[in-house]
Length: 249
Image (cartoon, rainbow, N blue to C red; front, top):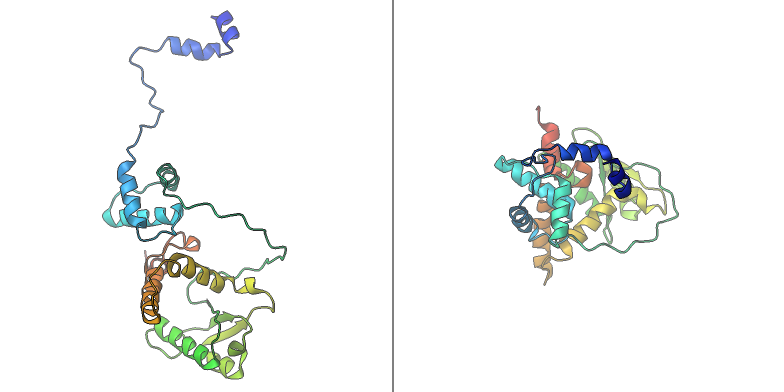
């Protein structure tokens, strides 16, 4: 046996073990082949109306759906493999040239109602102040002042740095903070939100006229808060994350 193993370049110990195995021996270390078609059907139904969702968000929707039904979860790697095999993955984007400007600061926070970010175009100070008050009323059940001071991060637009806006923001419990000049990445949370809305909603939703566009935007905002998986929230929606954070268990 030694001569044969040397010629074939195989392990003699391994060959000796195999020669002593009974005929009915089965390697139980091998993973049984799974039928992927039921999973493919689930995934197709979940992302049918969400053409911009990649495998991570598809996996998050599948996790939420199965948790609600009391069914076992599926590993994200399996979701990726199945979606790749059945042509459900998004096309890879062209690699962009990285910026040479460094940005080492951290804008994101780990709790709700600590820092809010805003970015606009073509808005007056009156409009911004209306948005501020509406945001406070919506978040704090109609209250005219935040329960505790909240940082209001924005760029240096005239509507944000006007004396009336700065005074009003403090009166309703907001702390106005502006980004450094020529540093749009410092307000990355707001810019990222705008990009997400454009990519996942505005780019494909019907908008034949202004009225329809506004109606669909309202639906999009509600879907974003209720259902959209957010990578920074462990692929939970904003409302789902807030509910879990406020839950005593």
